Image (cartoon, rainbow, N blue to C red):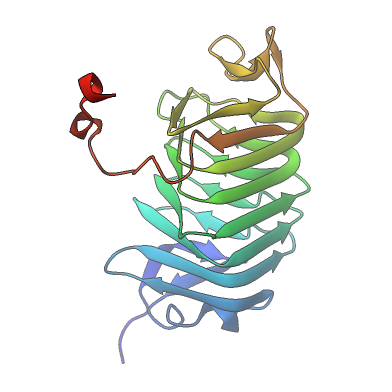
Length: 220
């Protein structure tokens, strides 16, 4: 009998292991298609709903470089932190992929590590929208080529060491920007608690992995 191997993260409070990784919709509260590839460390959410009570929809404890891949429309609902990562994690969308995270606490929480949101449509809504937890320099939020809506009554995008935007920019509220003093997206030194909307600069022009040097600005 093979010993059970844990992969370092939980879905709806249940450890993902070599016993259940091929079909995580067997977990209570999980529907649609959810599965994990241990070789590429890719957790795929395919038109999936994760409803979790008193635990995180996804908790990444020790899986470094976890990739959460989105296909179709996905929903996470919990009264705890929605997605909580303690190791570097990337949320990656396919074209048209969406993820909506609704939480009574923090929708997207990360601690002691960076978080990247890449090429997706993401809505994060909670008491805090997107936030870090330990006040450490590693807690960088990187958003690439994505549409992100974050809303938090205590802070929409807050308590982060830095914000890197690539191929997208803050659209709403106007004049909002990352503020190193408040460690948040702020306007006039005040952390934004209304909806923050980040939009791709232009659809179809920005290609994530192509070096910008392929453009000859003399020709423009």
